[in-house]
Picture 1 (tube, one colour):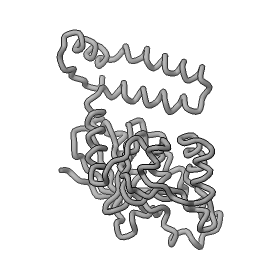
Picture 2 (tube, rainbow, N blue to C red):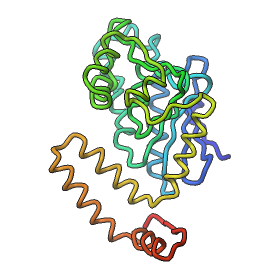
Picture 3 (tube, rainbow, N blue to C red):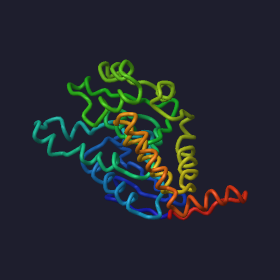
Length: 262
């Protein structure tokens, strides 16, 4: 299995054709997010997104946790200006703008920034006993990596308010019930399932997959009429691709299609 080390904080592997697995690698700190890890994760996502062979990105954590939040030891003494200079949102932007489908495989703790990282994914596979939440108010601050906005959109006002204003975590099983995860499984099945879904997506025509993601992400913050128009234009554009011709021909001929991303 090929591996690229980015200062050992993010491990990049290709366990399956077209699938990039990014593993947060600070298990001694439950993969707490410091500046160096965020930067390397941003770089790794950019590398995968610009690799024509890559189709899907899976993000997980080494050891028993996904990510236990921001590294408070690094930021406890910061001033507002110092916090701004860390450019956390610009680093997360690489994930926000990633054209490839992303899957978070969440085990153990996904708290604070770790929960916000998972919220950037398109699909979340979570362990039933995972611990998920936004505990920032308990240390005198509030979420700053997108949770106040993404949680509201994902699970609604009242559940999001409870998570953010109390700082109390929920289990992975409850997260799935609330719509905060795609599936909840036994912890030892989470990465396996995430890779299974990634493999399934990687075999599909990438232009169609990426166009579908683009329509959903761009339409989420637009008026319904605008979103529907964008969807239609992207749908129409796919009829200019070789993969559309191959897919529909293969269907008619009752054979497996051979998609090439063209």
